Amino acid sequence: MGVNLTGKEEEKMKRYIFRKTGVIYLRTISNFYLSMAKEEMEKLKEHAKNLKINVEIKPNKVIFDKKKGAIIYDWFLNHKICPFYKGHACLVYEDRPVACREFPHGKLNYSQQVADFVKKNRIDFSDVSYEEAFTKCKLFCKSF
Image (cartoon, rainbow, N blue to C red; front, side):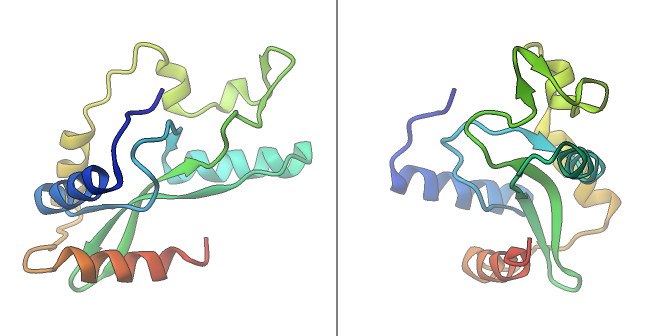
């Protein structure tokens, strides 16, 4: 289930998140999505290839570092309905992403996870404008 936001509200929220965390959201926040780590994304792509399923997995949260450039934090499955869910069964059950494993009792604290990631990777997003970071991240992610 998504959150109903106007375009202005969503833009305001994205700017606020960027100021606090350095995260650039490339997807629409209002829509439901399945977030996953890089390793999970790679497993799902491999399963899709083997099962001959077309999937679209795109960068979700991207953090812009002044020195390193755009860093993809996580990915999302860009489908209204999971393409791995067929006949009331998950085709990738053993390799399903953490978000699926924890559903419906998800206990993720994204803001703390992002803060830990920023600290661990020594990311510096200070003094970078939202517009600059958004433009550079979007260009970087076009190839995905």
